[in-house]
Length: 117
Image (cartoon, rainbow, N blue to C red):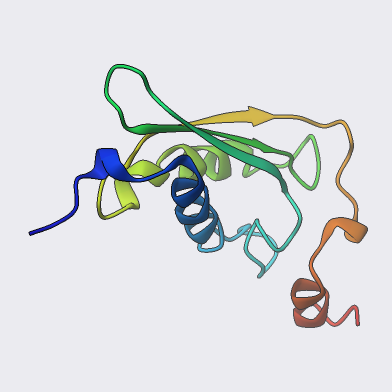
């Protein structure tokens, strides 16, 4: 018997969303968008009606003129369809450019992968 997706806490949903963000790669850079430092915040809350979690991802892009911006944002928005227990109902994307992205936002793992360490 599987657990009721309405029992998943917002904190558990945040972890699941982050796991999915780590599977989305910038098509122009061979690093996932989470370790690349494009994700500034992930916040989930329980919806009062559905009792499922709705999440908001605040993120940026490496450049405001990124040619793949729509593809990346659509992949983030589609995260609920990839979470097996369907505990996340919606992912809203808040695309910001302040503060602007720079290499200092990358994880050490990403820097190592790109030969910057």
